[in-house]
Length: 366
Image (cartoon, rainbow, N blue to C red):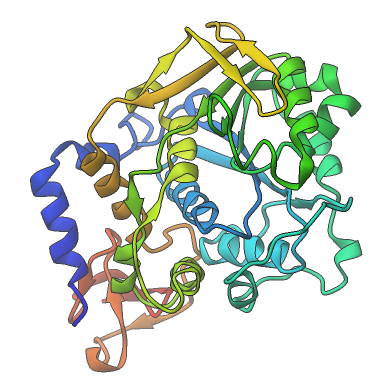
């Protein structure tokens, strides 16, 4: 039997009272939204394919955007799976942001990876062209997006390979220096065995770590922080399907490397500690020195259970950025035929007066 979402959320808030505050944007006289200069402008660079935490991280980024804490400028894809862009678009569309620009890596990769879930996720609503040659190039999306932003205003979150970033750095180093405030890279500090070496891309990783002109933050944490099992308790959506397929038609908790990288990119030292001493290294022998101005890495500030509760709470919340459908009901329909959630993501048996999510759409009951 499925565990009730409302009981799950309530138990989190009882055990971890700070979570409730973390899920709410700072109040201001303007109505609860952060000032524009306090919103984190994010470009999300993902290898969504082999692992599923890329999906969870994109979901977290959308929920932070729902709160007014982040603004997703673009998503770029550093893998080459033919369903990758459509799956990203489907997730963006589910969260009411199907117009976010998406760019794809157009070169070849050595030994491209298999995905157990991208084909299923790509079946959800999206408008990615079937002819992938019509999908914009990742470098073009990077350049066009950065040119449109204020100086020193963009945070790039890379949770995959660094091939797109190396291409950007070679093509437009001055643009990067002028527009990018911070680059957050999900990778191990020393001897990383996946994101910086997969597909023989260690040279591209070295290019970025060696020549990036603004602050680079390495996010190595998350292996022992498990999230996603709670998705069994929500209705059908692309994020739920991704985790279900990745776990071979079951729901389990997955390590949260990418989710924590996104959380740091937006929340910063509110939730994490920054470390600027020591050295980092790649498996090709390249080493680099940490410094406050150039290269740092993060560590957790709170307990494992704290991060799991916070991230899982985000994952089960339905979209709040979707447009209100032109549906008004004078009295509720039979709740046995529909699935109702309030705007806090809590399932209710019978809606009262107000706005609810009904089968993924907003419906006003009066």
